[in-house]
Length: 114
Image 1 (cartoon, one colour):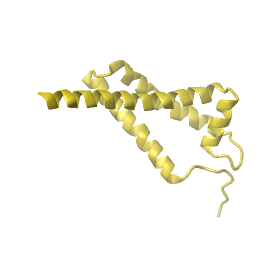
Image 2 (cartoon, helix red, strand yellow; image 1 turned 30 degrees about the vertical axis):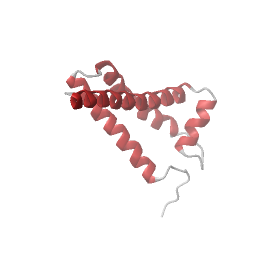
Image 3 (tube, helix red, strand yellow; image 1 turned 135 degrees about the horizontal axis):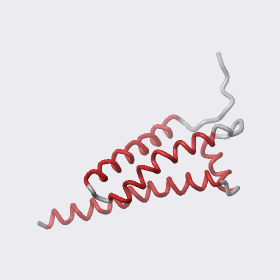
Image 4 (cartoon, helix red, strand yellow; image 1 turned 60 degrees about the horizontal axis):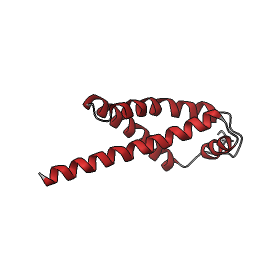
């Protein structure tokens, strides 16, 4: 048997994370092909690909008993460029979903009026 020396987030957190990332990527690709929110969608595509890669590469070096989120927050507080990029990227992806849902809601209200 082997021992794990690093702390990690619970499996359900990773499940939500990957669902969020893949759903965002799929939505952004779909919106790009439909030419709706095209620029925002292209930015979202770039971020859904690069932010997880940057995060994974930089959390490999974390210490024992420090999970990924704690490592990210610590490095953000220290002013690390990768942590700022990751947090700004995640915030943009949340903003992108809000933008999409707002646009979808307006379209649904317009359709209901007709």
